[in-house]
Image 1: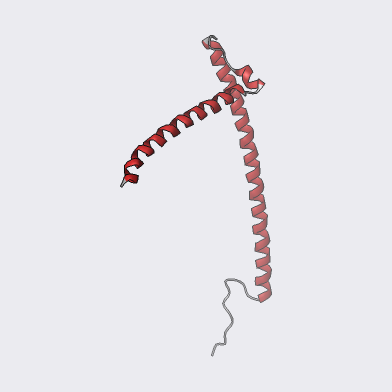
Image 2: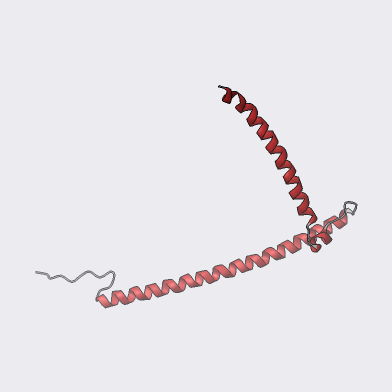
Length: 119
């Protein structure tokens, strides 16, 4: 019975301790991520006292760069899919030819009925 009495308090103490440790670790990791920006990203950082027009211009530049990057990725994906479709079509043609050769060698077409004696 004594083990059950201490379970609830230990559980809540562990949950609180885990939350505190997790919060501290998350804050440390997030602060390291901000300080390790590459030089290009640091140039793009907008100072808090800049004008609204500067912020809008910076936002437009980011959107243009993002759309250009997406366009390149989409083009590469499209070309890759076209190549795969071409490979599949070639494989389908080869299988059709092989099946056609097998059907021609057997002497009967797919839709032909076998010959039987009529009496």
